[in-house]
Amino acid sequence: MEKRTIKDVSEVKKTEEGVVIEIKDNTVEAEKVKEIVENCQTGKCDCMTEEMKQKVQFMDFKAEKGKIAIEIKGDLTEQEIKEAMARSKKEL
Image 1 (spheres, helix red, strand yellow):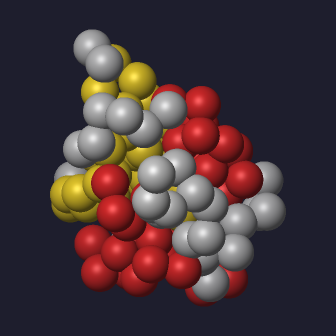
Image 2: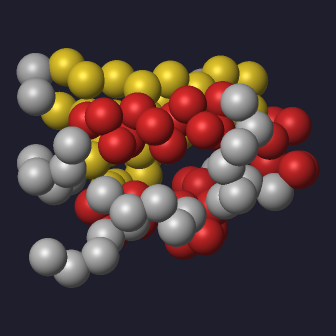
């Protein structure tokens, strides 16, 4: 199986309060996405710059009706999130 990271399996959408990262590949394990969110929540992630981390007010993992998503609230643009996801090394 080929190596995939979050940027390969998701789509970023702007929301009123920030952005949502929707996982589009249904073969991705929810647990692995949850690990990414937990790493970001505890500051263990290497994908966001310190400046970006300051802008994040809230981040949470969501799994509803078989769909996985990461909700991020804060003053962030889709482009900033896409750039951060491009730096993520965690394989899914």
